[in-house]
Image (tube, rainbow, N blue to C red; front, top):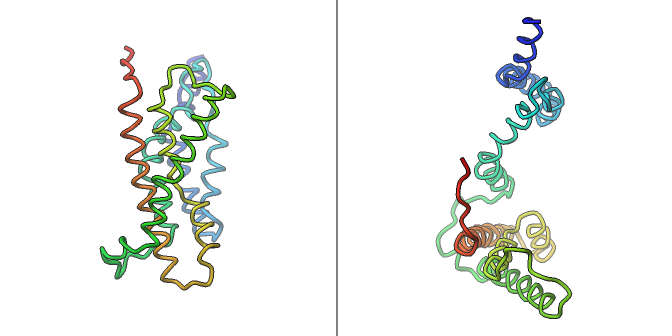
Length: 202
């Protein structure tokens, strides 16, 4: 009985899974296979439910612990690195070129204005209604956040400037990155100012 309880508790510890996962990742990387498969395989073996403790799920605990660093550090760095923007030789004047300025303005102003006006119009004619507790300030903040563009923005920019030369590739990506960063900061500020503060629960 004591042995089974100890085994059950040991199965909820994340350290052994992470250690084996690190070894698995190195082995898969050295084999020439894409190393992301190691993470997929590892996730299948981390328990979703702990015996006798439904609230102490190792997989959910790991997901919760990784959410902040992945969302705010790893994913943005991954997106920036894979955007293929080389900053070698880029001067401050490059950010003021018409192409990056136009793209950044489209992401920061064009998309939010279109989304906000469409939302206002559908509510105005009675086709939709505001979510409970939401204000137009919050809708504006969400509209601005929609200006964050990456995959589709790069795809459309590639089609628009196809055959225009490598210089335009760098300029379009600079515009997308600057516009997305500005939309993220402005949208966050608007939502922080318009949404009610939730009191922490003890």
